[in-house]
Length: 237
Length: 402
Image (tube, rainbow over all chains, first blue to last red; front, side):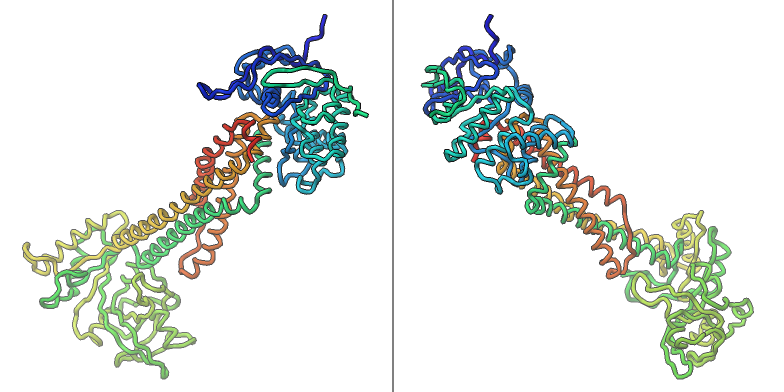
């Protein structure tokens, strides 16, 4: 018997607008993602990969089709229910880091725990542990303005993993970084995937980064074009 | 959860100190203005009331003539006679004391010091009618009153200017051609409500003044104090009819005297200052509303400016209500902070202003509490709209916002 996928999309369609100006961003996506996988999503601009990621991250809802998460249908959840699902199961890493300005690394990492209602001492502990995991323990009291791009992204990753989510969604996490920093971030993601068992979904333009993933999903014109195996977490020679 | 939201709001305020300060400036000024104006207004009212109370309450002043502004011209109205005083004492109910007064002015001389002052001839009833305690000495004896002896009780201004710093009691000085013994000195009473120094006076038995100064038995004014249990207006009416009869005024003629109720003056002046206080407070309240609009303005700008931040918060799992509460709490905390600073500022202004305005310092907990609650309410009302806008943002759009 086959293992139930963590995430399962069936016939997912997303239409923006209505009437003659309506734009069909997704034309019927079928996609299964197993728990513990490291998936890279590739494809040209407008191929629907960002829309898919938004739906997977429960930031958006499909126009039609089903979205199963851990065996539960989630496409019909309302705004607040999706927010609570995100709080529990999803961590987000963005291309532009999206840290709160004038807020030190520790407080940024603490933020998701605040909404979860954790106590101060527990928050501090968990946030410091997450910062330790990304190698920035000694930088906890620095604000984003005092950190390099690579460090900011690592703080963002710490923020994403501090709640120990099921899925880490990364939208072009290396898009704003040079190659050396990009490789560091990829190694960090690979490590989190392997040591903590977090399912990683990553959108990227660069084949070099996609090569770190186990599975690479190619999008084209609002459909899944093909799925291939990655290099299983090893950088290409 | 509310504790967390409260903390988030405080963090956000701390991170944008300058913006926060500008946001609350309107509230600070508004609350400060309202509290200062109302407190100073009330202090002024209290000061006026105090001055009138010093004149004595429940006192009717009866003067010849038609009072302020009426019946100008014609023959001078006739003064009262001692028989009028006796008639009032015997025929009017509810009268505690009746003090006739004959006034003139004269120059007092003592060891080379000259002082021009008012001579007030009256009886011991004068000190019964109104509260004016003696500082030293005694009031007139019955013998002195009957005989019209040259004895006097002096006000503190006369004491200071005529006797310098020496003890005036039992001294003899010259005034208007007679020698007069000081049998008592009066405590300081201060300025009258309408200017004029009440302490610049030499009080003698009325017979002395009539014989030695005015040369007639005319009485310029009669002070009547009314029993607390009687209505002053009822006593006033009985006095009017009695005096009309005694002065032979026919029913188609106007009164040729007037009766003044100090309570009436007190009520009128209190009413005026209270009204003025309200007007000034209303103007100050407008500035409070403007302050509230300022909060809304800056909160709206802040929501736009922080769209991305809101997107991040929503993405990491904040529900719409938490974002709404955060912005609402932020607005309320800011406006309450403004309220508190405004209150402190007002206390400072009041402490500085009261001695300058010569009014008593007061602290009015009611207006302070009221202004503070208003500032909190402003936070809720003007913070709600921006907060709702922040909570309604779509996380994807918000994250994409530059």
